[in-house]
Image (cartoon, rainbow, N blue to C red; front, side, top):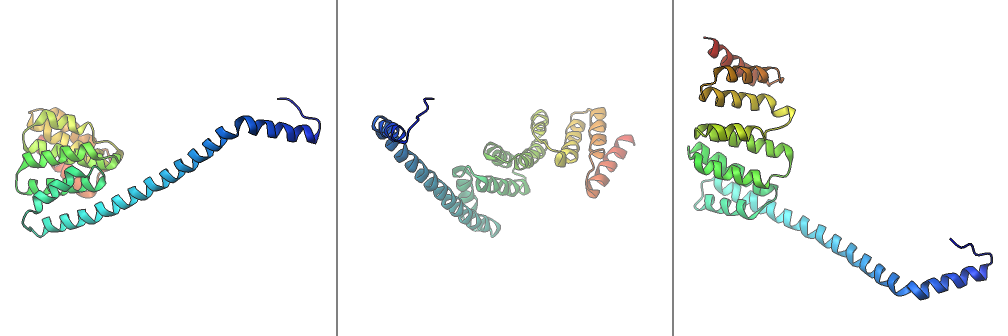
Amino acid sequence: MEVYTTENEQVDAVRHFFAENGKALAIGIVLGIAALGGWRYWQSHENTALTEASASFQQASAALVDNKADSVANLEKFAQSNTNSYGVFAALQLAEHFAQAKDFANAEKQLTLASQHAKDDNLLSMVNYRLARVQLQENKLDDALKTLDNVKGDGWMAMQQEVRGDVLLAKGDTKGARDAYSKGLDSKPSQTLLTMLRMKLNNLSS
């Protein structure tokens, strides 16, 4: 970089720089301001959209709980049109509704939709855990095992291994089921799940 020895030379250099680059700098400043304004608008738009989605979800969810007419169709429409967490929650609620009615095909459909939209790892593990249980009910045993591979995280290990053991037992793999239940016991399960896993292991031994 050239060193300027006098104040006048420095002033002349600055003037010369802005004469050559002033237009480009002005455009850059305008674009920067526009980008900042666009970012703030986008954030505001996202917050507004999430607030509206929250209100719509609560309304549709309450309608389903109250068994109001068209409540299932309305919540299905909401789940399909919202790819955020509220859409996932809607699909989970619908899946539970269908599972309780033993309509496992529609429960699987909603959980598959939820798995496509869930962005949080913990939420995605919960969706896949429930999906594997539904697939077990449908006797889609190989699909259930593949789904269980996507249930990740230490907090899910015991529950994942319990369902894996159930699926393997349904496939006639007693040894595999025993190994899965044992891994579940080693994964620091809750007291309720601990009792359940021990009972299932004892049943295999009898």
